[in-house]
Image (cartoon, rainbow, N blue to C red; front, side, top):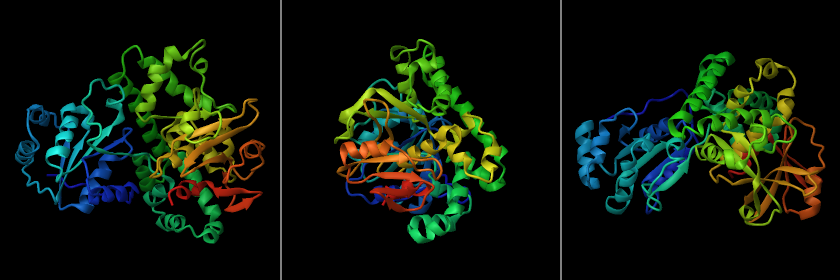
Amino acid sequence: MQQPEKWGKMQRNAIARLVEWKNKIGRKPLVMWGARQVGKTWLAKEFGRQSFQNTVYINFDIDRSVRELFDQDLYPQSLIKGLEGMYNAQIDPAKTLIIFDEVQECNRALVLLKYFQEIAPEYHIVAAGSFLGVATHQGNSFPVGKVDMITIYPMSFDEFLVGIGEEKMSDILNELNLSLIAGVSGRFASLLKTYFYVGGMPEAVETYAQTKDFNAVREVQNRILTSYRADFSKHIASTDIPKARMIWETIPLILGRENKKFQYSQVKSGGSAREFETALDWLVHSGLVYRVHKIKTPNLPLSSYQENEHFKLYMLDVGLLAAAAALDIKTLLAPNNDLFTHFKGALTEQFVCQELKATDKNYPLFYWKNDKGMAEVDFVIQYEDQAIPIEVKAGENVQSKSLSVYRKSYQPLRSIRTSLKNYGDFNGVQSIPLYLIGKHFTR
């Protein structure tokens, strides 16, 4: 039996969702997906520490011998007895959390989740796994309809604040006291610059919290990027490995341009969807890349109006994007706010993308561009019964014709511009500070 360790001051908002799952009527085994190294293991263990008397932790990647138990044709009750013996544990359905970690390494464990739901639903099981091993998975072993699911993303900005010891600033953010937030907006902008460099990968955040050394943070980020590249060879067909690496390494270059639309010809001269789409699909399904499609018109549901051949790609994390682009620390430490406009505003757009992805609603994201190609709105989300345009502005210069063109064409009930400006309403456009954009859509 293994109790989870406490890792610094880390706090994950997803804990509340796990507590809701525990107390839900008709609860099913929970599958917790996410890219590698976003903190799934810590989260599952911390949930066990907070909400159960004990935790039985099974790692299918490390403890390969346990796979032999799962390979047997066992019913849930027999499997539980086997686990009790192997881990010298007493598994009480009401008091014990069972964690299947790296579940993608044991297909039989995924299959058995179905039988726990049908035969022994009283057990609390969280299966944590990386998308990496599932993105190209063949067969029908995934228990569709028999599990609850949650996706874990890198740490959001408010989670980052707690992680580096800025709990008071996080409290101000969460209380949404707009006058108080305006009073400390300069401090929030400074912390946001730090987040742009450090990002939300838990190891990078913990390293910064302990050392305040940006060089040490960059070493962690480069190691994560290297491990992702190594994973390509483990999970992708050999013919697609170089293609995935080419796409992965091209994303920072494309985001650094004025026109951020992804084109296969930018990856390789003469490149085409036919050549690269399998590798790209794997990157998207692995959680390493976010794909944001263009929509023709902002009618609901937005997914019905997306143009599959037109899209932009964002990386998993703003800190990893900064590392992949070799952003110099001098840019961060500069006394002005050039960081937000540096790199053609790519870091700012990336930040807004991942803040919206990390909300508990996990809104599908789109962007809009008119037929003439002269006006483009960075994001459009479907929020309740509305299509809401979100224009991202790096810094405080909020002059733009694109949102005006959109509003004139479609008369949306709500329009949002997010920048370093404080809350307000300017000519019918709601201004939301960058550091509050995620909280705005979590309320």
